[in-house]
Image 1 (cartoon, rainbow, N blue to C red):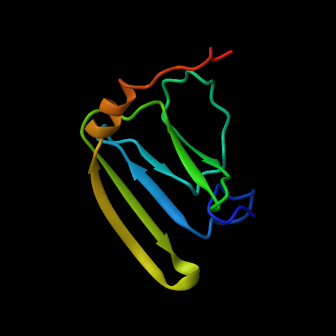
Image 2 (cartoon, rainbow, N blue to C red):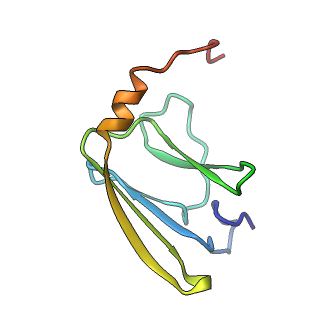
Length: 104
């Protein structure tokens, strides 16, 4: 099992993470990983593994408005905690990205 990532079939993710977008889309990490085209218009939450455990990637960019991030770790008795952040900072930062090499 991936500690913070998507569970294998029949398992539950120990860390429960949900991102809710301003358009009503809800993206939990409890949904088994699905394959989406790289340029998909469907929002998806992807787990990547970094040196600190797991990183999450949201694609495509979120719509303007608020993102609500909820996280819980029931295995250790940590109840759900929620924070609301503005997507505007993310969208603004995306305009300053410099592509270093082509996607393909």
